[in-house]
Image (cartoon, rainbow, N blue to C red; front, side, top):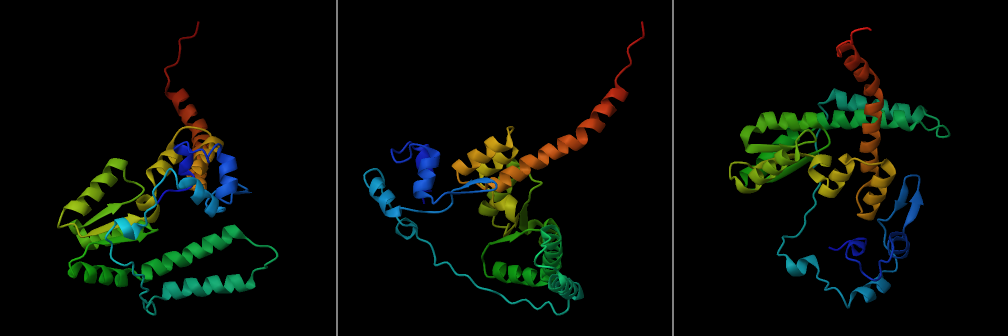
Length: 261
């Protein structure tokens, strides 16, 4: 499906400038990070403008796909004291906190602790679910936020699984995808949610040299995740600031001393 902002790349007459187009057709608004252009507005007008230069086809008209099925599988975690303890600790802290003085940092830290505990508690159930699907002759893609979970699944599944994580290079990721698609013995793809789902444009922007502002504007223009791109650039700047001084001092100590006059 064509994204609205992709008309900018194709130099459509309706897309004379980024900001005017975003405000008119993407319901753009400005937040603390810049312009948010993921909305939609004046679609009937845009549809009329596009009729003379585009052909619209729905996915079901051009692809023979099975119906999408979403199912929720309850998991019994009653045997995990760590999961129950993390949940109860979070609820007690949240009930005792002052709504007038929110602490987002501690909230996210405690919530992440709960997520990690629940992730570990349902590990066995996920393994059984994956084995059931594979036994039925299907291949499985498993997404998770935690590298530790991917490592545990990989240790259990062995060579029948490939992994795609943030530590993999682009070539390694492509090899894993090719193996999963072409090799009959590879039945499972274990993916980190970010590494397995980041568009190539977004990934390149996140690691490309350049200022945070410029990269963020480009991310908005191509409808990438501007926050994802900005965080990577800010982290890179912080790492340079922290490591530059000790590295320069180390180089200075190891450099050969010049003979005095």
